[in-house]
Length: 505
Image (cartoon, rainbow, N blue to C red; front, side):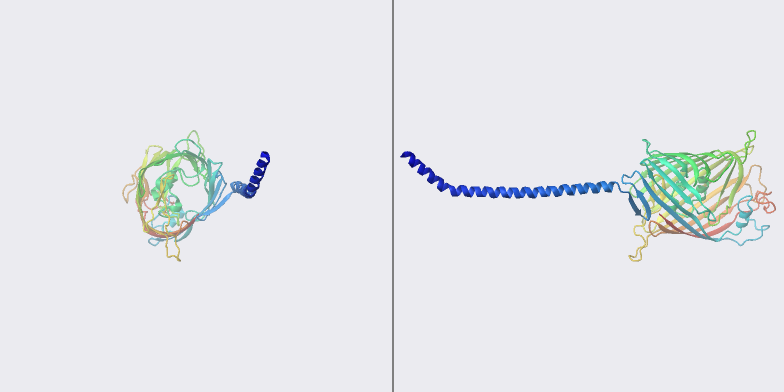
């Protein structure tokens, strides 16, 4: 009977516990169902995440293969996604208008003002310089990178000095930037090698319409637009150096081309947040002047000629001119100084030019220098381009906009320049001694006002006071029958009022 009692007790206990067990099972089932629902939800979210990630990766891959196009500051540019290939289109037009204020013209027999030696047209024009307008530069081109380490530039110019031209190559070069030392670069093609602070500044951002006459003359000896050359440039944070070998300008054909060396070293011993000091040296050495004919028995004429305009190109007449000097070579050495404090900048260069003449006359020495200052009335400083070691234009903090009452940036400029192309010139009223060069001395005082409406458009107004002191060599130095007597004054004093309209991108 004992086992019956135990069975009854067990069954009774199970009966009593069954509701609790059933409830526990229901709770477990509920938890399992909830976990299954959560798992299903997580699986859906994971699937969505995978799809989203896949879409994003596809979009990134698609973007990585797309070429980008931009129009920063109005300049169209194209770039591959990795930046190894770029192409930027560049253009500039500079329209100059000028009035030349000079004494009225008289007949050649009594009005002795003259231009270049042996040039009948310039002799006429020197007495009545052209009031009018001229597209000084009308350029279009493309520049960029290729294969990462190479740069290229092609620039074509339809502007000119005194009149527009059919068109000429201003620049066409390729440059390799992959050398491992001192930011070194090798450039080959047609371009202007680095030859001075004023010479290497961008013409789009120049303080005045033209470079100072001494700088422009030296630049034209072995550098200048369209000059065939090979150059090595290198530098660091506070220095830039360049060495180049150059030939003729494209389109100028001679018997044996000119060969020149052009070098420059510039340093900034001080460069702070709002100030800098610039020092530099430059040299141009004409090793072999261009020949004017075939070399017969080792003998050929190789002339060098120095002449320059009065820092404007609306009229192309040159008022100082040495004429052709038969020479073995030329050496020009220049010193540079510049300083800047906030929106005030100063700049000066001095040039000494020695011509190694053939024969018994010996070397002829010439010189020139300029000093200029810029003050931005609205406060923006001139920018210092480290690679060019030269100043560039200020950028307006508030571009011109009548709706907001903003007027862009305004800048005052002041410059004095002198170019002395005389060598043993002698006194007025006297005949020149043997070996003398009466090229003339030109002095120019310039006052300018620049208005930068935005980063692309600007106007430049200027007043120039020009004084040319030049004696006639006599004989037939100018044109037969119209050469003033030896020692006569063939220079002049005049004033020039000019306005430039420029758009560049």
